[in-house]
Image (cartoon, rainbow, N blue to C red; front, side, top):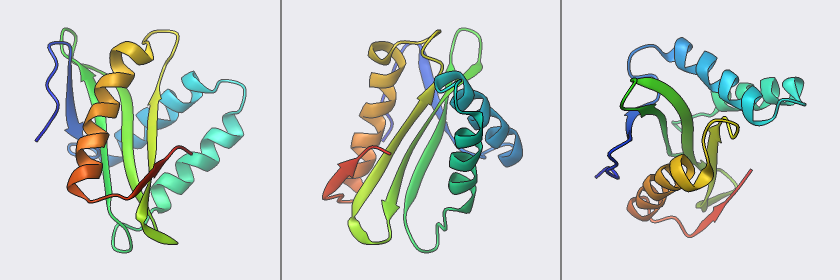
Length: 125
């Protein structure tokens, strides 16, 4: 089940073009943390390298409905060292979007996913 919003929708990451979504993800990361492009690139490589055969992941691109513009990334990744532990990632441009608006929408979806995956622990980066 997906969280509903009059402003946003979610689509599975890579649904249409996986490489284009990775490019979006780097743009979002650079907007959120503009002072560390090297760290953002490294973080992106970790997202690419995540092995979905060894751990469960739910990840999405958020779309702003009025313009159909992709505006954010949200992910929930199971941690191999502790299968009950999941990391949450919310990535968007904080100059354009507030956590109260887009972040809350994304977070609610990831909480639903965490419940469905029976996550015992949730954490940030």
